[in-house]
Length: 101
Image (cartoon, rainbow, N blue to C red; front, side, top):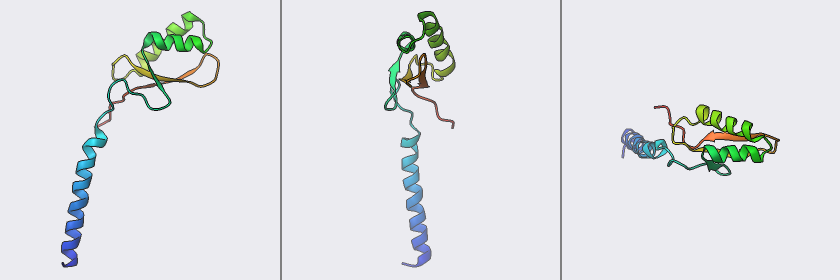
């Protein structure tokens, strides 16, 4: 096989591999899933988690509502949280973020 044909075959193989891997990599995670070590929570569960971290109930409920308003980009009512070891603080992220296309 000539080297020009060999390069064409290799290039075509790479394009097929990228084409097959692209849709799988671009598909969003299922709703409700969180990366390890985060836990999925709804608004009332997040309020309780913030309260467990030492915040007063009224502050925890307000913070949970604001977190969902600001962070829940996909609107499914689920966020992911993890305590970070500081009084009145938890780390909160959206469970599924739509990829820019």
